[in-house]
Image (cartoon, rainbow, N blue to C red; front, side):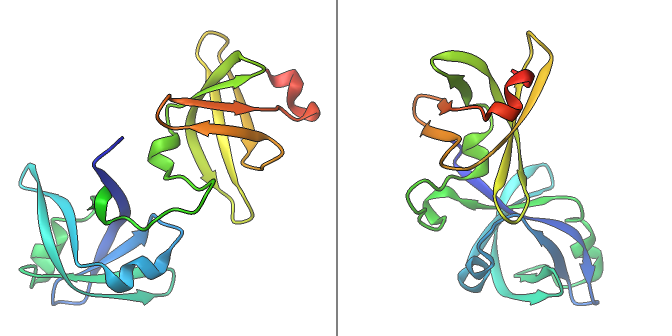
Length: 171
């Protein structure tokens, strides 16, 4: 498992006092209300920054970091992800997973390998897992529903699924 989880990506600066305009990469926007520290690449290494403020702005979050006081300072963050230590991540509910933990899982149907999770699409109603089998060069889009995803075992890098009949031709 990764030690850090991405919570947002800096898309631009905001104002002249060094605020960052951040695209949230979490389904729990309230997590920014109590965010104390983030990590970001700074001069070639991962550095910890104290969060002075975070507030919603349209569909983005505006974040002010300690020591980033000018637009020029903030410019250096454009295109970079903001990370939190996993130990500071919010607690997950049962059958809830961090996307980074799902990527790479080997997917099986009736103990037959059908591919690996390569991407997760967040659609709003339910996530969709993109499963690719490099040997067959096939791609399956599986809805993340309890009727489809029967078991997720992060520690053993395995997901067991039942492919819906309408998608069986894809396997």
